[in-house]
Length: 341
Image (tube, rainbow, N blue to C red; front, side, top):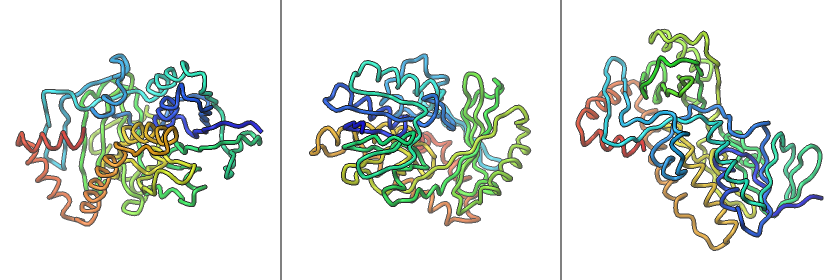
């Protein structure tokens, strides 16, 4: 039986960062990706300043930079602005390919695409009916994590995101739309890219049923006179149910670990941080994560915030409206930017 020291399932930001951190070590590493190409993923493609600082991305990969975002609550609007860029957009295919290129310098890392894992055993995974042994297994396989299910934690997938990818240059502002009538405690977004725009929304399934969310989204699009006839419809699960990172010789990272924000839906920074620190735990059993606890602290704040907004019921519109008015005051706008980025 073929054997590797570390097998990573999923070549998204978490899996790629984990593999990169294991590069040039004495460990043989196998990175498995079920798709034919690494990079493309159903995602709005928004980044924060934390993402950018962590990745140290080359300028050419950044599609748009923003030092302001527009917030809309029912009939109220405001612009939060600062002197520095704090919101960015990137094409996920280009991000994945850039991360992949960084792995080519490491002789101890092997990457396989079209490699769907059909079974997980205590010491091996099965790909194309062939077992491949491991000493350590990393589940970086997203919100529908097979590894998480193997560990006995069925992904909750409480959240769902839906969007249209529309080939247009019409939209160039980074915008959020809070419309409790349609999206309860969440929002719709407009994220511009070079060749297209992502226009979408998200919510918890147990607060808004997926069919109702889609219907509400269509109504909102109609209200805004947004033409999606030439757009590609996409939907994606969002698992924010955190169960842990380390389970003996098996680890979870990124969305598979349920680290994404239940409020903003952002998960790339969490994926990068957890991918890196999982690798460090594998390399050094005594390593104590530093950034993962910080991520979890922020996640807990977001979980409390979203639960508060869910419980607020009909008062959500008032709360969001007060927020928009407060964000017109510089010190409150600064706090909002810090929370976002």
